[in-house]
Amino acid sequence: MPPTRQAATTAAEPSAGPPPGQGAVLRLPLYGPTTAELTHRERIEWHFHARHQLVHPSRGVLRVSTTDGTWVVPPYRAVWIPAGVAHSHQAHGPTRMRTLSFAASADPLHTERPAVLAVGPLLREVIVSLTDEVAHPVRTARQCRALERVALDELRRVDALPLVLPTPADDRLRAVAALLHADPADPRSLAELGSAVGAGERTLSRLFRAELGMSFPQWRTQLRLHHSLTLLAAGATVTSAGTACGYANTSAFIEAFRNAFGSTPGRYRDPEP
Image 1 (cartoon, one colour):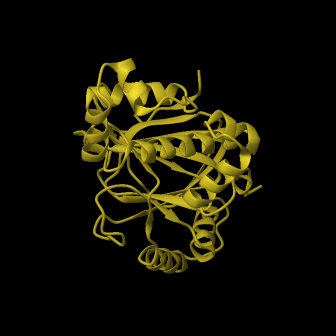
Image 2 (tube, one colour; image 1 turned 135 degrees about the vertical axis):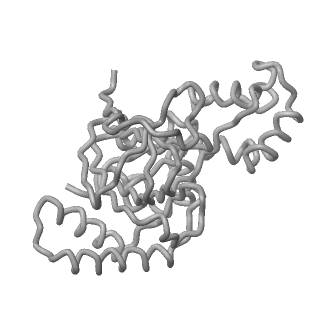
Image 3 (cartoon, rainbow, N blue to C red; image 1 turned 90 degrees about the vertical axis):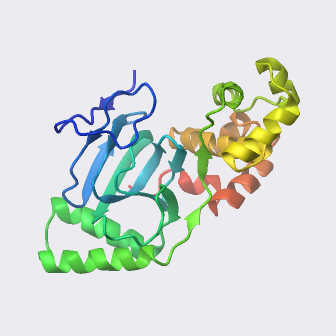
């Protein structure tokens, strides 16, 4: 069993939209910048915060889950989690998770949903500097606040990336999703998958667009690329990750990965010592 960090470190408060079957979701306080070292497949269970949180895995890959969907966050990316949104984390590969927090009144992204963001050189350096400051303080509180303002200014300049994998609610979509989560390389068409779960292709196609906001091929591509990130973080080669995700050859995998993440798969192996 993968290790788990329980979120129940404070008294229970009313849930901020708990996922079905998860029980109470606890509110956890945020005191400022943090750094956490997570082992492969280690989980931080469902919780929420009264402040916005910016989570940046400077090493490894982090899967962030909410009731709306899953965001897989590789290095060179960060996820913005709005105040009050219930979420959980799972690490893939040894992961260094760096976080900043901001008052709920600050809203640089103008969104009520989590969003994956590109982390440019300046924002990355500010995150690393502030989170390293916790262990080795060399700045005054005033200097740290100035860096936090720089981070907020950078966040106002970035665009959200389309890296969410929406979670289906319809039972027929959930059945199809379960088959593909179990085997992302499953080559069956939507018609064949529909036959396996007792639903028609046209019905499923309509549901994917209406409920998840994307076509079935787009959703399956997103699922495969999300899975590839977790495999690469766990040490898989680019070739084996592509094969496990259903790509006919390594070139096709690299092209799809670059189109989605803006870089080649090899860059995500271990960017920070």
